[in-house]
Image (cartoon, rainbow over all chains, first blue to last red; front, side, top):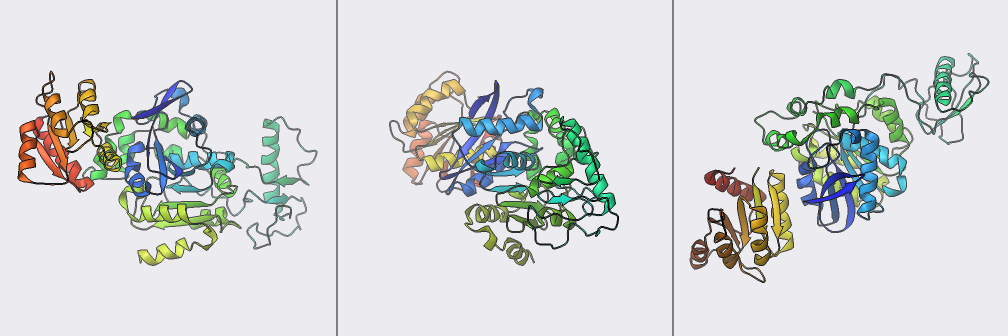
Length: 347
Length: 125
């Protein structure tokens, strides 16, 4: 068993293989152990690190370290202590949330990102929301063209996008409130403002994970993934006594669905998103969400929906290994016709 | 869950067994040869030992004999791993104190199944 100390708390990890580094981050259920088949499949080409997050497996159980921010520090320190300047990261569920947030913060350290069962939820305002990464020229002129932000206009970070007056006002009010919170003076007029949507605007009450994870009872969540009679239920249930339910509830306290979608949009590295289409724990994103995320970013973001698969593709379906390997090895993602390939194979 | 000590000099096989058993939920300690296994056994007090027959510094047979003579270790089940299955070699292993033989190559599922069966029989599953 391998372990390091981060901030005085133990972090357990295992490593296998030789080659370029890949870090695996587990989700809300289980521990590093369910990555073993993936590690064994990838080990001939990669050096695979799989760790236990704070509150899970054999890592430290300090409740003060269970927030998303602390798990980000864990990943940061882990890579630094093990001398990993850059690594592809594969994250599942909570691990996907950590991975995408970390990649946004430290894009130079994450050359490639594979997100499995990532919490990408519909905010029910996508038709009115301006995707992050676009500049928005707001106008109070009600006669201004109420062009949908999703129009196929040639995108340029400096080109403004017209919005309807009501949407403009809403966005301006949100941005002004955010500016006040950050101690930045509020612009003199909230009506004629250019907002640089390279920042991310939070919207209230967008935390579906609270309802999904509940009080963090792992057994309840596990039953949403597997029946008791299934072998993977037994395997994953071995980790239940080692899981602090507070690690689940604290990890999602600051979750904001809209912010996550916009974070996805601002990721500069190739990113693959894998979802089991029968996942009853974290529903796969509807088409509207995927359209929002990938607007103007089709060459960087690839979606691989796996029919007949639930929350643990890495355990349920051997196709996952091929998907992961193809993604990690592809030199030019713009040429990887992943969606088409997997659609053909799944018919 | 049970604690298993693995003694195997081939790194790839050692890692395969290690990770297969960890995936199954066992705690695993690894040794790269027979001498290391003899040194580790009284420290970790495993519930089962898996030992390659042919290893540098000390063979699996000799390591098994020495471990079985330690206090509290006589009844520990030992599985020998071997690439060959000749009758005389198997008999040598049994004389050294082996509980079972597993012939290489073996699948992860077979490994997990055999380990589970033996632990169940020994009452430490």
